[in-house]
Structures are given as C-alpha cells and as structure tokens.
Length: 346
Image (cartoon, rainbow, N blue to C red):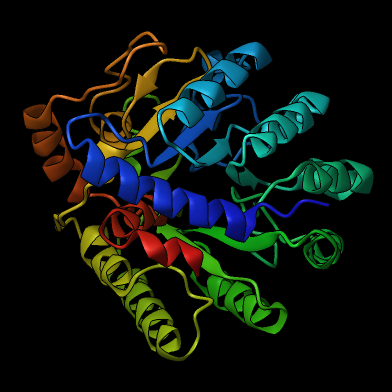
C-alpha cells in the first residue's frame, strides 16, 4: 500500500523551493484547507459551527476534485480536510482521500472520531485510501459539560493499529478552556505513552461574537478569573518544559508563550506569513485566506482557473491584526514551513 507521508513531504518542500526562486510573483499556495461540510454530529458549546445552525451544507465532490486539481497545478502538495465533521460524508470522503492521494497530496484529516469509533471498516478504508495524518479532536478524558469530545479508548486502540498497518501519523487536537485544563494534562500523558503528538489551541470568544444564539455561556470556558488564569499559566509552563525533552508537543514555544497573554486580553502580534501562503476553500468553493476567516469573512473569491493573487497591502494589514489573536498551531506551522520548508521532512 502506498504511504504518502515522507514522499509527499519531500515533493511539498522541493516544489516550494522551485516555485519561490523561479517565479517570485506568481502566487504560491503552500498549504490549503478544504471545508467539506459545515454539519457536525456533536454540539460543542464553544464551537462556532454549533452556534450557526443555518449554515449546514456539504461540498460537492466534483468541486472538491476541481479544487485539488487546481491546487496541484499551482504547486500545492499539502491539504487539510475539515468540517464540521468530514466523516458525515461517508463514502464520498473515502473517494476524496483516494483522489487527493492519487495526486501525491499530503492529506491532513481532522475528525471528532465519533463515526470512526462505530465503524472500524470506515476507519480502515480512509487509511487505506491514502490519508497522511489523522488529527483526532479530543478535549477531555473524563466527561465535561459542554465539551462532548471525550477520548474513546477503543478508537485510540484502532488508530494505533492503523498507524502501524498503513504508516499514517496520529495527532491529538485539543481546545484549552477554563473547564478542561486538568484534562489536558491527562491527554498529554496518554500522548506520551502512545507516542501521539498533541497540539493545543486556546478557546477564543471573538470567533463566536457574531453568531452566538443564546445557548452559549462564555463563563464556562473563558479564563475570566485570576484562579483560572493561574491554572492556565501552570499548564503552559508545563507544556513548554515538556517540549524541551519531548517532540510530541507540536506547538512552537512562541505559540505556547502567547497563550496566557491572549487569555488576558493582551494582543501579541507576530510575523506570520501563513495568510499569504495558505488558502481556504468553503463548501461553495470560494477562496479565502486564513486571515480573512478570522477578521472579515470570505474574501478574494475568484475563478479556480485563474491564478490567485492577494493584495500585498491588504494582507500585511490583516495579518498584523489577526496574528495578535491567533493561537492556531496549523497557521504557525505553515509560517515555519515558509521559512524552513525542509522541516516538513521531519
């Protein structure tokens, strides 16, 4: 069975180097995310998708293939498949993975794992299809009100089997809130035991401000007391210390150090080129950059057959604004990839 991880990484890095130095002016999509659906089978109280019930829709599979072809033509070799919950697409998801893997794409796939835990054959078909990374979105080991993404031990066992069988990479994706700080410690320990990297993103209210529907209680998740902030400080200090000896903490030290400040309402800008080199596609196929998603919604819509060119002045201003609030490891890793593309080999 074809394993697309390292091979795709190498092509990903070399393609970047060639494109950068041969044609500086042409847009380079080094990384792309595709929202396959805005539907989800969970209702996390802190999630902006769960707050926007009117936005539920799936992407057309023909459109996905057009996007993947366009990305491949323009030099992109890395894609992330997101939702909502992508596994709700069923066999269509397997078709998408197989198609992208056939193009030599490095495929990052994010899931809450609920359907994969119920159907081991579904999980195996996705892995067999050529997915490179399965990012298991999990926020707690023990139940927490409003945070239903609880670790499923049987699914974890099956994921480890798939890792050995198909050479995929596993990762824990967690959201840090006031309610689950102690759970992060437990997930880190489980990650250490099973050699699974973990990345953590701070819960942020600004993504929810314009769509909250009255059911959301920010007091449950926001670090709004001195006690909760002290607990957050200790967690981050622990993760930074652990990172010195354990590569399984994938967040950069810079990213981790910014989290307590952002939780206190302190804007901490950093020089992030991710908005320039990252594309997002919504379920309608519209193109936007990660900075637009955070600051002002879907922008830069353009025909997929044309080169995508961002306004440099607009990008610089929006990146400056969003980087003050961003704690998304994916964007930071893209930033580092732009500076040091060969890091993707490791």
